[in-house]
Image (tube, rainbow, N blue to C red; front, top):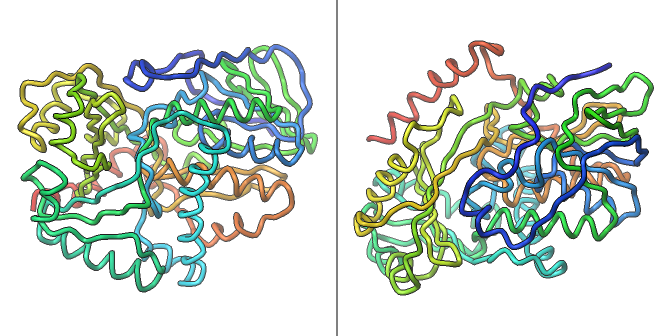
Length: 434
């Protein structure tokens, strides 16, 4: 059986502050030969590289095929916020799988964050990891939700690192009148996602992984019982296949595409503000995300630029004047920055699922996948790679738990699913104004 991808290929990193400040330059060759490997991984983002590193450390021969360049997609463009949990509330996971399995999911989400710290230390990855994250309340109902959330996570999941800040407490840490309070987590944090992913790639290369850039998979043939991954000038034959393309997998595997929807999200980066001004705005250098459905999120870079993200696009079409759009949103939070310019503005796609829970599993015939991180990709992609590596090496129990999460296809088919999603989310977007 063969599948074809319609995704663009051969592109470099998008013009962003991340690309301008990357500290590791990796250039890998195109695949122009026929190779044999134990595992072929499609996609050189965090998910694919995490799986590749784990597998190589177990002694397997691993090849990674990337249509563009390492970390070309969300892994090299995201907000860089490392947060506990998943894109959906834990109540969604409890309803789908029961409290015991939901507790296992929760523990694995924390493992994903611990895995990042472990890899940074072990492989000396320079990515400016900073501790601290705040979920900020804009409306009174947000404070009620945060209080209930803290109580549930403490009582049901034993998570004790949360502090509920009232407005006075919050204003000691962030110079914005927009927020009524927030839920602070000292265990979450933020990092430079491109530098982290490049460091992860270097660790995988050191472990013996072969990575090929500018090598789009144009056909996968599984008719022989093995997996033949064809690129324009080469081919890899492998016993196991891992799909790690997420929002950029395209039509390569139709059984996966129907369960996710690519969604555009955008970030602006100011000119450097200097340490003194940055400390006045966010005194503890935490990352922040508000509680709206179409949320804003922001943090400081290591050179004291404010990185401000938001403005979700369900059509994946960026606003006509992205810098102007991001400037407007930024100055609603920090009017003090009205005279500051944005040096960069960029966007990219994430993949959401219908229930916003992660979509991990296997398709039979030794094909594994992880997708649909729904805005919680930094920690969860690391976890996903590890779980798939466990399954390939004979320990599938933890990955199989995710079979409890039933993922429905987005309604409307190829033509109408984007309009259907816009209608379905209209109510939640309207609630942001109440």
